[in-house]
Length: 202
Image (cartoon, rainbow, N blue to C red; front, side, top):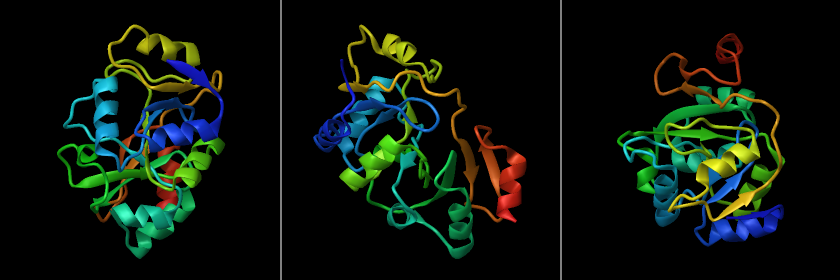
């Protein structure tokens, strides 16, 4: 595994279908082109993630989100309040992404991150990116680069590249909320408190 710091190099590798470990506004993530079926399949194998489990997606703006999810006016107003940020929102999906992303579900998890590198990659590539944590399934996610490297060392399948940004600020993963029903439903507690989200949703 190589370690580099050039965003342009990372963008080109992602365009080629590579899988990259990259810092995000929460923890280190496994990033690839979410429209590239082979790249996403490779990510699942590297992570050893069960195929029935979906993975979340990074998008650069609400316009891009609309390409892959059904978003009504009240949902859009909520998204404008919480994005960019540490909120993954579950919405009804549209077509256009690698099918494996959705697992066995009919929904999609989307997020606009608040992180310079990821936002730059999204702008350069102009495609959605995978937003799953950089760890082997069942192993802990991390903000510590050495722990990330250690997890993938000596594995048969490894990320194609590691973007080393050093240790990130301590953070929980994103909070996951379901907007497919009439009420806000929190599926995973995370970096943003429940009380704050409920207030935003009203």
